[in-house]
Image (cartoon, rainbow, N blue to C red; front, side, top):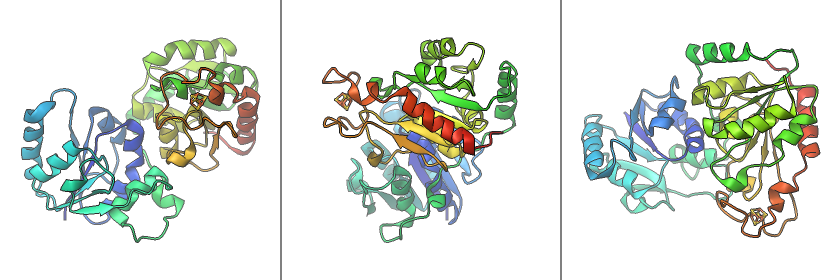
Length: 337
Ligand code: SF4
């Protein structure tokens, strides 16, 4: 019995889909329809038989692209489709591919085209929500191990990270920081200040080349102890670099989930969003930090471009000394590789 998992949303969601993929794979072969970026992060995942790239904003855009992919999917003769991404387009695609059993969330835009609807549990971690597409509503609460994502960097990523780390001198433990986010108000503005408080560590800055200015600010805060890796690694390479670190400090964004996928303890800083949305860190000894007692928080499902109230207290008043103390505590109990 072959199955197909649809996941064409954000990168973090794709990482959080790996427990679902593993659960579906216990029943037979599983293929996954993913974005070009999603395919790069799932590379090497042993629970997936084939990654089928759907470039919905590029070469597969529009009705022609959808029809072309539907024809291809028909040849797979899938018995079941799990709609981890709930758009109407994905639902149309699954039906056009003539997949008889289509399982998705009861809140999704494409739900009218599903044959089975699973409750979207607002109070659960998103990895559990996705896992329940296979496990069902009646399944007991899963152990953390069942819903922890897993990523699989390979030789290529290991070699790239080995080469990069040659540039960094010293023997202090490595701390990864990921200061960027596509959502402006999710960016904690005190990463450099925190780094300047931690003489006992070396740092690597994770991100895309769009984060290079932020990386320069971090590097200036601890000369000689910071490696700017922004724009220099693939996504899976970044996961491998995070795996080498004792701790990751990140915003509520994709690097948190990369760290969950490689078991690196993470301090995730929440501003306009909160962990209760279901996207907190899942690696052991991880922690979510935010400013309590702020009436305006949370203010947005993702984080607005700018603070609508102008004061940005949710991130601005999250003190660097508080985060540095948490990092120090993790460094004292974690042995980095
Ligand atoms: S309104 Fe409040 S929660 Fe939203 S960005 Fe501003 S300070 Fe943060």
